[in-house]
Amino acid sequence: MPERIEVHPDFDKLSYENDIALIKLNSPLVFSKHIIPVCISQSTASGKWGNLIGWGSTEEDGPLSNTLQYAELQILTNHHCEKMFNQSRHFQYISSSFLCAGDDSGQIDSCIGDSGAPFVVQINGVWYLYGIVSWGIGSICAEPGIPTVFTRISTFYDWIKNVTSLHF
Image 1: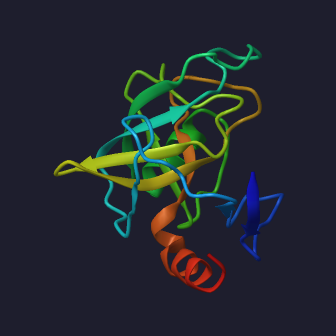
Image 2: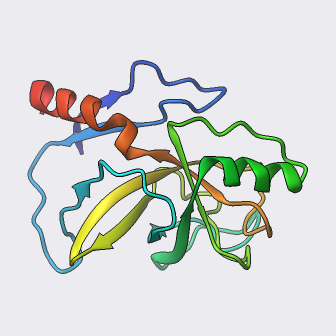
């Protein structure tokens, strides 16, 4: 159970800007082969490949998955992400607080139930949290040309550091 939940003070429910919260647990986690720590990324590098991991639906309007799913996606520039949305007639502004990732086929994506799921990149054997699933287009899942939109963790590095040093 959570002892404390700290929602970003500037979270906007309409635009999903600052879509991040921190949770302090009542008791420490016990690390195992299934539960490992992750480092907070300070990088914004596009082009890297990472893994989206979640329990979301595997099809539009389908039930949540009983099996933990993962998808390998490539980080895109925000300009390229906006261009992809525009070309698919889903006009979106992608601010610097967001990170987009996708694959060339467009068949791999987050879906309903994946909000808050991590997007991690492994560098020299160390896992880094680059993003958390933020929003998508309605109930559309894995539509070609539509990337996944994440909250960009590096944007919130200082906020995370400040909140965890004060309250956690």
